[in-house]
Image 1 (cartoon, rainbow, N blue to C red):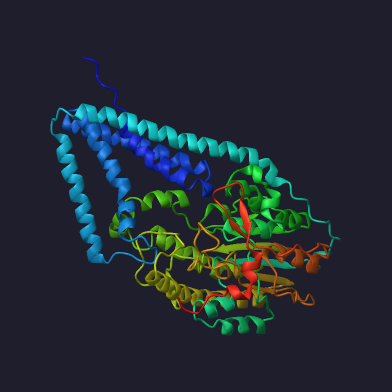
Image 2: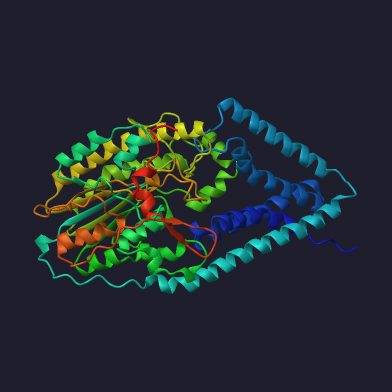
Length: 525
């Protein structure tokens, strides 16, 4: 009798990887996919072979193997259904009960499949067809998206070059620090929405020579879009037109981020570009002249995959302290703050770019430093689902922001005290926090909270910071280059755009709602 074809153990194993990639495809790159696919595919073959030798039955071993992969990759999703809000979570006892119950399900299911049943061949054949169809569907979706990106990518590099500035003598070219504090809210948002008075921190920056733009706004409410606009001094939907696809994609912005107009302008004037690793691919600018990264950990996509499994919990239980993804993120944040002043020792002039993912969740710091009890999983989610978690989000956010305030003040003091030449420091956020954000609807989003950003800048001696408080990120370096290099750049209208993920439009203009005083929310919800 001809042996039945069995391919579902490998297909079931790689399907979650393909699904997660396709589901997060706007924020992924194709290079992120190959290693997880290769590892999972090879491990699935090894597991199937080991079970075949143990059970001496190729088909039953295949079914048990497929069940194991379904169980493994559904763990995080089941956990998320029971504790959906990032601010919520399990207690230790609840987690223990959940893990035990989930393990019992695996044991019972495996015991059932190990028995010789007449319906097992039909189940195996059905799994071949179902898994094969789902894998093909996800591959088709990924391929279609790749074609869209290939068509969009050449257009994304078309923004006009910056107007040439007159060369400055070496001593007149200032070192420039651009420090992006991810998700740092504007002072009025902190006061009205979070019930926190941040004036003490801002006053201390003012005494150090900074000017605070009290009504600064983001142009976009996602990191890659906002930073691409700031670093290219232009609106991204004008540089990468609507033909690039329905809905904004991250990867067409990669070239705008990594080969941006600002870096080209400064390199042409003898600058060395220095970047710190952020921990996310879009702002890990490894092609800089100096790339500072002493910590290694899972990539964003690898972390997403791991969080769907019980592996982080197991790792946290048996691994040496301080080696997990959460601890790596904590150490990266601390390292960046602590070593920003080291860049004053480099041969000038330098442009230092540091994207620090804090006070953005996860909330791993209180006002005094890292929390004593850290979670097992590194979850980047920035969203809330009910009033209780909203209150928890805001309380934890303020604690983490107070930690950031203390660290940035220390870094600024060290930079200014160690600087051997004129220095410009720009401290900004890419967008505001998300306690009132509904990613499906601009109308249901607290737009002032999401688009109100911190902007504090100190230009070199003799170069006054602009008095315009209603400035947006796209004009930050138009102003800075005009003041420092006499670049002659015109300021663009300060606009804000909310992303649209369905329909022909990629962004909807929300400028008026962002700035409208009537749109301000009450202090408590």
